[in-house]
Length: 294
Ligand SMILES: NC(=O)c1ccc[n+]([C@@H]2O[C@H](COP(=O)([O-])OP(=O)(O)OC[C@H]3O[C@@H](n4cnc5c(N)ncnc54)[C@H](O)[C@@H]3O)[C@@H](O)[C@H]2O)c1
Ligand SMILES: O=C(O)C(=O)C[C@]1(C(=O)O)C=C[C@@H](O)C=C1
Image (cartoon, rainbow, N blue to C red; front, side):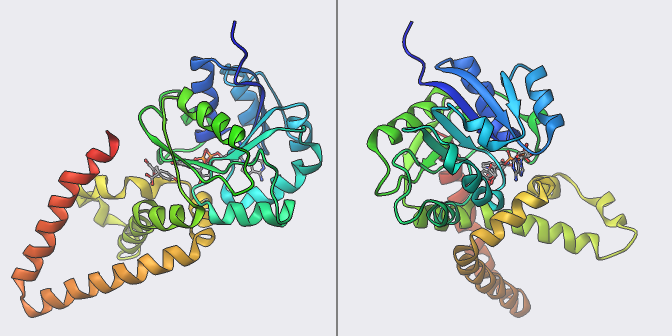
């Protein structure tokens, strides 16, 4: 029997992502005991009932005791307080990673907690997979299969720790890539964070058009497709929007400019401009978006 990748894995925040990671590792093997931690004891009890975790604690310090692997699966706004709570209780050589949708803010939080050099076992991460649902009962083992996971190791991250976090995600069926935290935040401001803000903003505009909110009766498949992600957890996207401020503002400014140009073209009856934009966008989506999942 080969040694498990991780003898004891502590997952702080056993929700959609943390729960799916636990389920995937259960199926794939390679992890010994899984200890859950979180603020919502009901979720943790449910996770034990579902066989996703072996046991739980509502105290992060207790949960990480003796753990050789720690995954933080909470909203990014909670990560600093959790790192602060677990810092004195981390086992020597423990691997510490997270699943947060922003990386610069998580790294900055870690430096505020650990100082100029984070532990060599600290390797931030981000699975590019999810749904609009949240909570452990929305989790499933297949979530990460053939999806990308981005690791953003720090200069002080130990190569062995980075390899261990990579191996953990590859166990789930994910394809692992590395980026700098800054590049990560720029890329996902454009491909994930802005789309969510647009979906929320569109639905909010229509919801405030008429107080009877009757207009949604006439929304068809296009609106449903475009706005699925507006059903995502508001707290999660509150945290992401504020954490990735600079990259988001930059891409929002660009988008606002492009939308203004489209408005001007409509106002001027410039159909050629509209056709140019629509054709370029269709070609890009048809060619690149579907390939992204290969
Ligand atoms: N939902 C997605 O599509 C998706 C995809 C990739 C990454 N992420 C990232 O994963 C993280 C978790 O997202 P999720 O979708 O699993 O959310 P979720 O709401 O399903 O799970 C979050 C869990 O963290 C717990 N929690 C919240 N605050 C806490 C605290 N202060 N201390 C301890 N536990 C706390 C909650 O009780 C819950 O169990 C976020 O950082 C998010 O940016 C989400
Ligand atoms: O599929 C969805 O519902 C998601 O929103 C997942 C999604 C995204 O595609 O933007 C959302 C946040 C993450 O950090 C990564 C992926």
